[in-house]
Image (tube, rainbow, N blue to C red; front, side, top):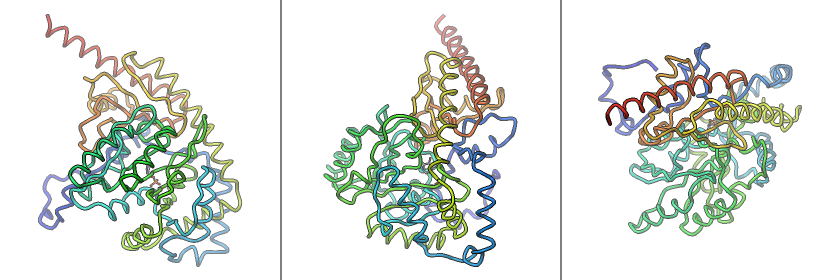
Length: 419
Ligand SMILES: Cc1ncc(COP(=O)(O)O)c(C=O)c1O
């Protein structure tokens, strides 16, 4: 985005527009698109691996046989055929959903935005993980939510601490509008919510009558270990709004995701979507539906899983070799991200500036995953999904060098002060 020094339209903006923020990932897009930069920043699916032949055939068939419908508006909630295919995707994760409980959205991102639109009044509290998905923060702050972030550990959200926050609010006669969680292969944390905690979270929602906003874009991308049930499938009290997407199993460029929710909520999502964009892309839905008919979507998911697993392994090995021993990182069993923790005194936003300038390597600084834009500064998100293995190793090597230089500098300054 262009930098604006003076804005003559200031007097026209709605008050809430003052709360609008750019997400750190979006800010980085332009910088990391430079071909000389090794970007471990963006969570870019490996779209190279999608068969050009299949795409060409599908596009050709749609143009030749269905062009009038493909170029037309469609129903706000999406085509039944798209929803049938979504039920297949959810079934592959052991989750049953009726097509009557689904709405097709413009990516899972629209599901987050519509949830915020429907549920948040200015000043309402919502609970999210610390760290949380950087792209969700603007959706919540745009509607002036008070984002209360509860820490994660290796087993995902600390549900015991979330419970404490809920109980604290209850003492003042309040409750969070929802609890936003990414239970599988967290972005940016790389961890998954344990089975035990899934049960605890669903029970907490039932006990206090809370809504859980379950965001699950990565659940299909499991490299190893046992699949875990979705919160949506564990819930027997209609407290879960479930979001997912075709972005990670097929293509983010087609911009198709979905929301599964109880009927009354879904009716509101429909109204919100009518106002936002009338309907999901007809052409993109036809592409997905033909693809599901003609190809085996799960074979493609298996193929990309193999690619991502190999890339994760290279990144883990490189971290061990090149990062200082004071650093630690998560061990994701799937998804796109590793979350690294550096000594407290390292500010990863400053480190990013140096890493870009001196070593042409990028990552997402940790503070982007906190609503205050400040906490978590000694963390970094490293994406292994979109970069070939040799570049991952080189990128981590270069990053390790910058980190060690910064640590050396800190030690020298500290030693200097003490003497
Ligand atoms: C946790 C999470 N939610 C939502 C999204 C948005 O996905 P979509 O491309 O479906 O809008 C992403 C994308 O990276 C994500 O990581």
